[in-house]
Image (tube, rainbow, N blue to C red):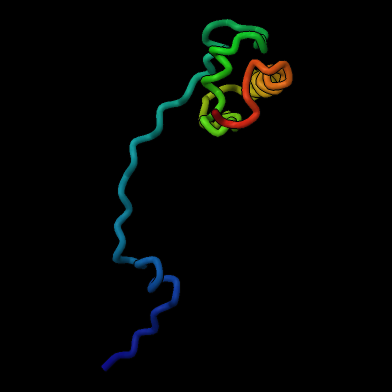
Length: 93
């Protein structure tokens, strides 16, 4: 009778028994502002800014929205300015 030592890690996570499922590579998100050729994001364009704010009022991350770093920074400033002028709510509605 053989005594096999099983590590705690293989017990917890299934070890060799678990088979990895292959995922399809995710589609690369393209920055909407770069695609449309928008150089500056205007804080008065509330309809566009609302797409990048959650129901709770949080700004959506660049990873989720697909914005490039340059436009994500501009978007953040525009949303904050729109909040200060009361065009967008600080909290969700």
